[in-house]
Image (cartoon, rainbow, N blue to C red; front, top):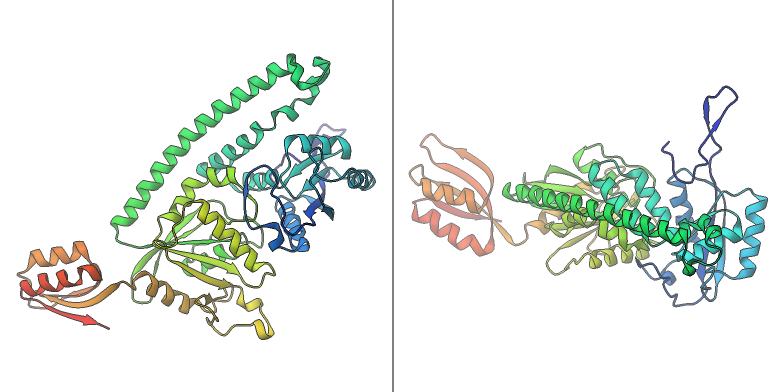
Length: 462
């Protein structure tokens, strides 16, 4: 298991052999507003408004996030918040109750499911007598454990350092004794904070240069895919919606797919065949989540540009989840923040996990009341209908022709191969090429004219 900053480290046995310390016990705290229109806390996040979700579901998601990095969840508690307190976010009475529980249950870590300011985090740590992290820090820790490629590691480190930079004032509390006063009075500790800030800024600049190289490499890969004339289809969706399972079902790629939040961080692309033989690139991407830190969105922008460059976006939804509609809003908001123009990027909605629906909510094979396609990535139900729908959406503005091009019309054949998608090709004994091609409708007339001019035959396939 990867060591996290929340582990208690290693203990030395009497023989001098290091042994693993006890796992970190965590208390999940959900400080949720009782107001109908909940104000967002400072910190910059993207996601659906809090009122779109039940507090029970929000607390359950926070608990799953904690479980994703192997914390031992000792308990969870919902704390109603009427007004956000500048000092501790929650009221002093609740802070005292939580402090007693932390002490009684020997809690090592308190996970507060909101965005805390540095001052709020520092004050809560003092009051509770335990380490405190907020939702942003928890997601950053998960991403830190999941990143496997150099690209993913750089993206996560950039987000970590950006988050850490704003909290240096609480990272050097042990120097306050040297100052003999408050932080704004200056002293030896102030020098150390400024030195750390400079180091972070220098490291951030280095990472940003490396990420720019990653961006150029990804752009090169996209151009190479374009030269192959294969359309690109990107899978997006809320974390744990089943994107990787669907990706594996369509490609047999063996991408990690677990019932775990953020099981996939590093994008994967594979070439698959549609019903009529056309190849398309399918890309699996990182999952989204409510209140996703904007620093993470910025860090993963190079990866997510694959989504913006896709010919078709497949939005995978877990329709068995109680908060499926709110999750849909979260995904759409993040896509909008990335600059997605829905008018130029067709989106196909896929309702996954229909095998978990029962009674009146169950769906027939691939059937949905809306334009969405119902599938079960786990069982394969509805996959054939999904492939047909992908093909229809990708090529709805294109015509398919059967062509016969004489062997003497080399120029006409070259034009067809350059400007149309050749779906099949055969050559008869006389040297004539029998082709089935697909071409955009704005070039259909030119295709017919060029083939006819060379003495060939053209017929539109229905």
